[in-house]
Image 1: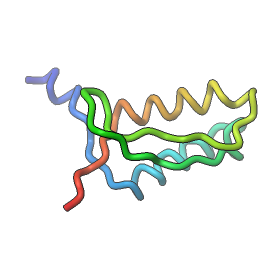
Image 2 (image 1 turned 30 degrees about the vertical axis):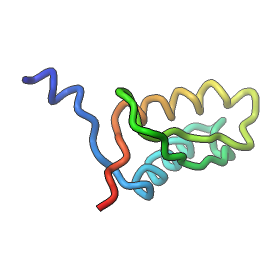
Image 3 (image 1 turned 120 degrees about the horizontal axis):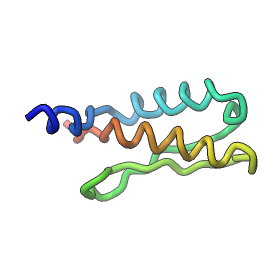
Length: 81
């Protein structure tokens, strides 16, 4: 039961996800100029959304990918009401 609570992702809207990703990228000095968009995907076991990164410098690519992966582990796109 405790493990299930730990593995459960928090539902978030597209706007909430955008804010979380934007703020996380802004905190990293190499990722401050990264442009992105959130893309809905068919639900899989792991996620139902992904990030399309634009204007990423080579030095920021790894860090931006890691930041997005951490957020994807914690949040799932909430179902539309």
